Figure 1 (tube, rainbow, N blue to C red):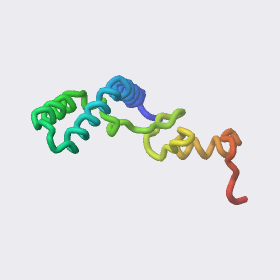
Figure 2 (cartoon, rainbow, N blue to C red; figure 1 turned 30 degrees about the vertical axis):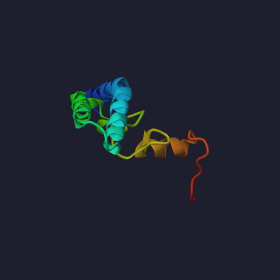
Figure 3 (cartoon, rainbow, N blue to C red; figure 1 turned 60 degrees about the horizontal axis):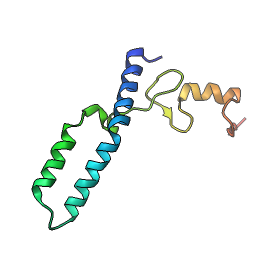
Length: 105
């Protein structure tokens, strides 16, 4: 099982990501539009980049990590069911995952 501090830290990052997501997307769209427009003012583009840089680093979606819902394990986590490979096997063998059948007997 993962340390509780790691799980809480990941939850904190996810909340921060949710809080700043709309602002980040709006700034990215502004930058995209200003880059395409040949008559755009470069100062506006620089201001948009500065605003984007001022956002917290942990608000970036790249810093998020998928974790197992049961154990908190970060590696070998299947996103469709939200379980790590070990827990996935246990739940699959018990028949708790709907639509999943064993491939070979």
